[in-house]
Image 1 (cartoon, rainbow, N blue to C red):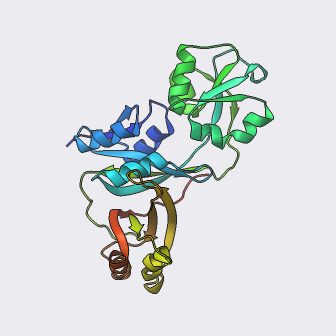
Image 2: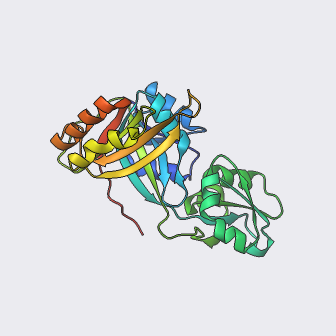
Length: 276
């Protein structure tokens, strides 16, 4: 089996840090897109992949959820990463001279207050570490990048301002995806599913009623447009417990009877929200 762990981005990306948290002994495999991360795992070029699914400030990463719906891969783990953004520039540049910054759209969104305060224009690119690399290779007057401190070290940039994210609870949640489900352990579990409901009054309430009746705690519920049908929606749901536990199994049986379709994305050990 491959000892590589795939992530989207380049060296110094927050996704690389999450990947190394999940598999510290594995070789990180940075890829340009989320599609390629999924493909690397499917094709066994990586033992697993680590993909972001939501940020505590900026919300869900919709492309990841869309790919999970379409893929046969399993969610086998999760990790929370405290995201600390930094304003980077080539050596010798000061903060007052920065007029524009490049970074991933999520990072720019998470630093909106800082950028507004300093009247800095935000320019989106595909990756935080990729922005740092681009700046190091092609410096321009007045241009900076928002990325991790590790990215600054990797690409020879200086940190002009640190911890510039708007909120100190800026965590990103990542899923670990793999071809096979993992053996169950004696730890608390969470389960992620996606389902659709029939278009009728009370359809969603009826679908969710089984979770309340079985006393299963929901930790996330979000709707997304279906990619194969206009004005139709699917629901992504996380709940506490494993699909094989009695109460979640009872709730899922009710959901299966009442929903248009149900797909279990995976049951996995619940990650602690560490950091600071």
